[in-house]
Image: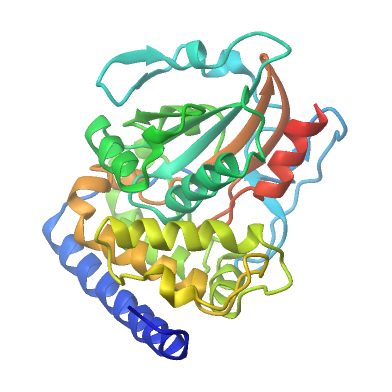
Length: 351
């Protein structure tokens, strides 16, 4: 096991290896696949709106932030709050392979709170980190026991099963994971479709105007068309030791679970000896979790990643419903930028 004195050096080495693995693997995948462009961005105006509690906030201003800018804003094509009617008839697949309409998973009862989370695809960091944070929030009792979390991931039911098994999602009675192979739910809700994305009809008519989806994905990794990503990457390295226990616990829980599942690097509890349970996130801890996740994703891309290149850069969002009334929504603006868990929890407690 790693001792605290050895931990930071190991973390730095692993992060370098993870970056090299991602670059070389994606290069080989791009050479072996013929992929079309991603929907979105081209020729369309987007509403960049702050995450909001719909009951308390109204009206947003149209503006386009810097590609590299960081803010607390999400990306949404719609000015109005999402409606369950827009997605209720969309078919999704449960882990047992059965097909259900999404509306059946959101009870129309005012006293019932449902958190609908549109994940990105099952091979994306956002999906992994969001799911990891919900499992820890539930284990801590941050979400009431009658609050339901519906995770809608982009990909096949087979990919969803691997994703669920990797994160032990089935152990929670409050989490329902379903697969949306075509990303229909995210599209219907107006989620951000990624950097340099163009409509499929446009790319089919003028294929020369589109570019390889791996290029778009890597551009977003480096912050292009993905405002806030760079600062989130840096945050993973510098940590937030004053952020409180919850800023760190989901990271430690996920690192230990990943190690238990055989993901590299393997970190044991002894690596955290002498660290207070109330400590905030320490330097390199989150970066190491991302390295652990990244290496696993690269090695299992064929099983986790979407078959359609249009979906590589499709982002998601978080929507809190009281019955069928949306009281909060946040649209992910790029890689590593998703709804703040403390904010979501506070909304469920307030409503």
